Image 1 (cartoon, one colour):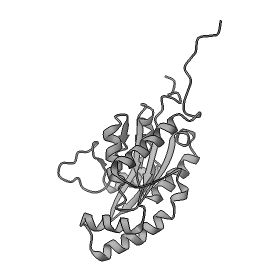
Image 2 (cartoon, helix red, strand yellow):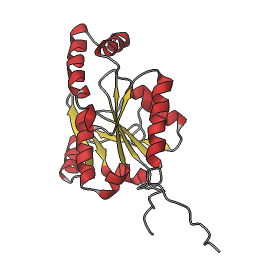
Image 3 (spheres, one colour):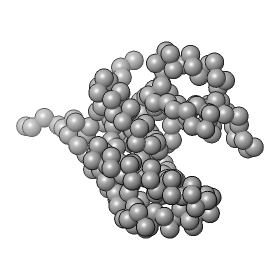
Image 4 (cartoon, one colour):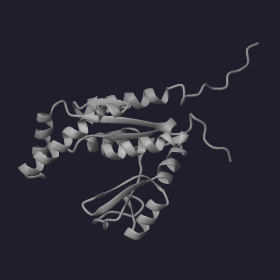
Length: 213
């Protein structure tokens, strides 16, 4: 069976933002409003939480299996956070893209950099990849959002803001920058980016016209 044509292959949409920047909400909105957009299911070594299902929320792996997949080069990117490992399988992403789905990955700037590097080595990934950075209009606004969440102490918030400044400094490494506004406006801008990218001449394809008489 022949592989998918350019017009049939979906996009790989990578979005990054500092903690509290609103990327989770934006991703939820994009998926809710675009049936062809799906998440890549991530592998993790942490235990399932109540209500989570293997193969739906995550692929739950033991540490040994995860390490073997790392050594085999199966992951597009992987990281260890608070003692648990997380990784995005290349087969998971390519499998969904080849079904014509747009695959959405919400990851940090380091993960995005890893995927950009992997795409330079893989023509299919490179053709499909678009990267977007979602930034707050100011650090003060980001601080307000973090305080409003009520999840962190004052010290933890200041630490997150310090990391956020470093992450925001990486925005020029991304294809697009969205300065976060309202939820509706962020979604509109995201959809506009995706639509424009689908019409690029290295992705779009003309129909087979009738020959001229």
